[in-house]
Length: 166
Image (cartoon, rainbow, N blue to C red; front, side, top):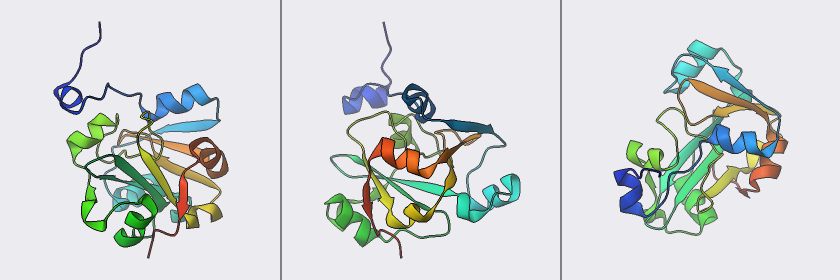
């Protein structure tokens, strides 16, 4: 018998697999890195020392109907109007996900990932990601990150591709 958290009971969603579990089932080659918990871009730069060109950040949004995962190069900023247009939702309906929202996706603050175990989540990649090669992105947990070839990630996720940054 499986247990259901209050958040799952309230939303009607069953618990989903973590981003790492999802990737492990695909057979796509990736490397899982353990490190001190990361919460901000300055944490990444200070603790991991990775080039910003290799960092893929994921922002998680929620609307009344669904979640939206927006993946973009670390140094870019999301343009909310463009993101809403790419998602096919009114700009006013977008709100950043809260920690309890992230738990529904098997993620924690500081660990947001473009990989999700729920099929009803919309994944949008900024078109600038096409210029990236091997990237580091969230694993769902702030003390782990995933290193993966961006083309493999794009093939697997088949996200909406749009210019969503300014």
